[in-house]
Length: 302
Image (tube, rainbow, N blue to C red; front, top):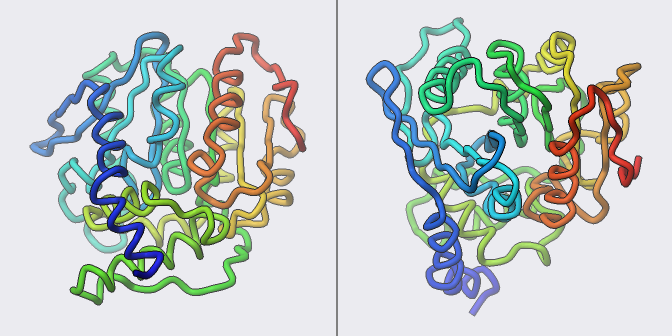
């Protein structure tokens, strides 16, 4: 049996049981916006914290994080429009802003759930980081922001291998082998870090994605959004994140803004909150626990 086949065997049992156990702790809210249903999952009790997943993702990008964060927060995690359990939005005419309807849907449905002007903390991963930056500027009432492996920076990437287009295959084992390859090339630092749960999350999320985020993620625009966001900002990357050169990007995005902090987590790739969950959970809890206008996390390692 190949290593991928072994992972698939586990993912059909133990890994999916883990997903079901975490989801059982959530209250699911299906909120309608312009005739489309957006699913939000709510965990825990406390001040509101919104988590946005990445492209070809779902709420499960945060599977290793929601339980820890829910100890201090009401954690709101959507499947963004066109991902997993949420409806896809109507197509946007060519040449128009494809992200605008997505932002409108998130803003409107979150407003229904907690109130339009209710202050929130907000975190986004990868494409979800770019979405979070735009949501923060357009919604306002975002107290603190955390961006993990954020997309939309428009700078050089260091991906060494091409990903495989799994959508051209119909055989389930061939699809899983391609997804395993893509996890190693893009998401996690080395094949040894790909476990059955990561493969199950990646397969479930990718195969239910209808929104195409790649072009938006590569087009830039992050810097302009951050120029408009004046509240405290934390930026996290795995040191081996292939979607950027993290240290130089971190210094560029921080600039002279004393309200911005950044951290590289050793031994991690792009999906940093999965690969280094305990460290990310500790950093995020510390960051969102702060109440002063600007306060550095004392254990950040620049």
